[in-house]
Structures are given as structure tokens and as C-alpha cells.
Image (cartoon, rainbow, N blue to C red; front, side):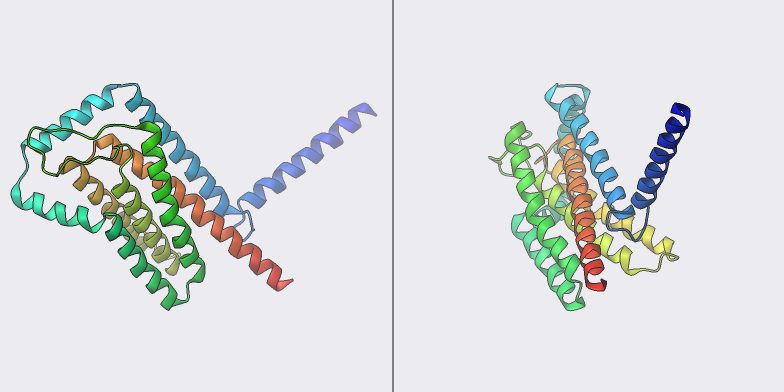
Length: 249
């Protein structure tokens, strides 16, 4: 009898585990595949950010690379490249990012994409607030040069605010465009994802080149932003699915 009870308990736990896994991998479930992917991406981003932050605060090899990269660009700046990257970096300042986000919001409103619009509304202010909070937590000084390309900045360096907002904005735009395509159009999806990443990376590169940030500031900002974006998209998707279920009951 005890043996039979143990077998029943094992079978019961196995059934529950299988159902749990199936629910987490269901494309249609309220807390299905979208939430699983969102949580996994968020956890990966947290680990990456933690490793970078720990290396920076511990003055490990990455800080030496930071200094080498920053001073190389400062000493080898090319006038026309500097001008182009100044335009890009100013386009993604706080005012620039808000302007671009408002244009994206207007587009989403015109398309009737209300859940995507809501995602944008929580993503952009959220990533800006998170970035400011992290800057004050780590308190890293900006790069300094004898002949800087930019005027001295009084705010902290780690992580990069321009890069964080650009990553969130273009990441969300890329996610929206990918979701509008048929799943069979995988080549176009890949192009969109790469383009969104390239735009964020370009903004990050402009900050490194101009001497506003170190390389590690930019990498940490991208990790921070992708993690926040993943949970925002997954959270709003869960809200949409839950509301749909209630409306159909």
C-alpha cells in the first residue's frame, strides 16, 4: 500500500509539472510562451548587467579597456565623423527621445494599436527613471580628456542614458513591426531585429566616440534597457490576453 501511494504521488507531481510546462510554453495562454520568453530575457539581461557592473566597480580589466577605447577615439577623431555623431547623439537626447517617442505614439494611435501604445507609455518613462536611479547608485565619473569633443557633463556616467532610451525605443519599434509580419516572413523579421539593434548600437557608439561614456556604460545600458523592455512587452501582452479571456466568457 505505501508503495502504491508513493507511485500515485509521483504520478500526480509528474502530471502537474507537465501541465505547468505546457502552460508556460502555450502560445495562447495568459501566462504562456510570451511571459516565459519575457522572464528569461529579463533574467539574462540582469545577469549581463550585474557582471558588467561588478567588473566596473571592481576596477577589473574592462575598466582598462574602457580607458584605452575612450582615449583612442578622442585622439583619432575625424571632423566629419564627429559632426555626424553629434547630430545622432543630439537626436537622442532627452528632448530628442521624447520627440521620437511622441511620433511613434502618434503612429500607433493612428493604427489603433492601443496595447502597443500603452507599452510605449510605460516603457519610455520607466527606462528613463531606471537609468537615473542606476546612475546615482553607481556614481561613476564621466571620461575626462585634455581636449574633449563635448562640453563637460555633470551627471554620472554608468549606465548611458542616451543608449538606454534608444535601445528601448528602437527595440519596441522593432518588436511592433515584427509582430505585424506573417511568421513565414522570417527574413524580414531578422532584418527588422538587426536594424533595431543597429540603431541602438549607433547611438551607443556616438556616446563612446564623443567621450561622453565608456564602452561598459553603453553595454550595461543596452542590457538594462532590453531587460526592462522584455518585461514591459510581456506584461502588457498578459494584460491583453487576460482581458480578451474575460470578454469572451
